[in-house]
Length: 442
Image (tube, rainbow, N blue to C red; front, side, top):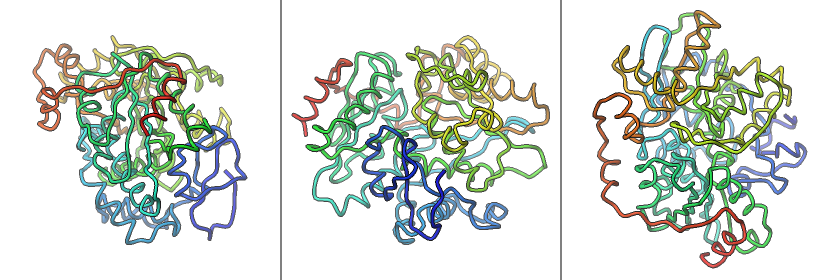
């Protein structure tokens, strides 16, 4: 990372140009730099001495405030940071013990029942705060492989001055996930793309790089390519650590991974001083990062559909941030991150094992994480692991019920969607028609 005067307010650079800086407000609204890199904080220094040791004295909201105040370095007044945190971090991230070395961090207690609620709600509040100074409407573009869209839709619903367009791959998200995207209306529009998540993400990226669009419409992104999504996701790594008893065992975080924003947020937390020993990148058949960690060669390819659909990403955007953090050096990255990939058959087995052994119902993504941690334990006996449970199992109701042969309770806020009508714009994977639709719609 570039170095500069630490007394300056928060600035960010592109992973493709470390000498050109923008403000936090510019990075949040632009989403993607013109050079197609990704924004990174100029400084990721340790939090004040003693903060981590005193974590148990802080509430979850207070942790978020301290992290933001440290990163923002005066870019937003403290009172306004508190307001943003109080409106966005309104639900817990409890730690559940499976055994003495295995813990589940439940990240599904927000409105859309997925970890992305943390990032989406924080981003909505941060954008709303900055948008007070703007006279033009802001249009948020977001691609989703499952959970991002629902979280963004819930986070930005009825936010003044902001409209949201969510692109999702037809037939490749669960029924209830689709209802979360397509039933709200108001300022939320869903586009059903006849392709994969990677096709949706490509349309979004092309839109940001198209001068004809960006000169006519104020565009921003709510995917994890936007730095405003990653910052709040770092909060719950500190929150998890706070809930653990110190026993001297090396602590690893196992992260079910698709676009790798969640794992990158963990790397931010480590860079800010959280004593994490290793990370585990847990993937399904879309295993380009575990493959890289094994071979040193990054080979993106079209994604393939799996049981853990939110991880069906063949060219994860945040990989460039991971490289940037560790000097684009394979040896550096693999010292910090272990990678494992598992099949749908293995995922089904893990769901059964977790339920039969611990009476805990885990979702398919968490099940991949469970498998990865168990594999890591075989190679590193004595490790203590926190597995991120990224979504409520009811979001994958038919699959989970069929695997466990058990009826799964559906939280009321999700159950009510089943009776609502779907509304979505049909779209192919070509950029031209998408650009034309945007220009006509906004």
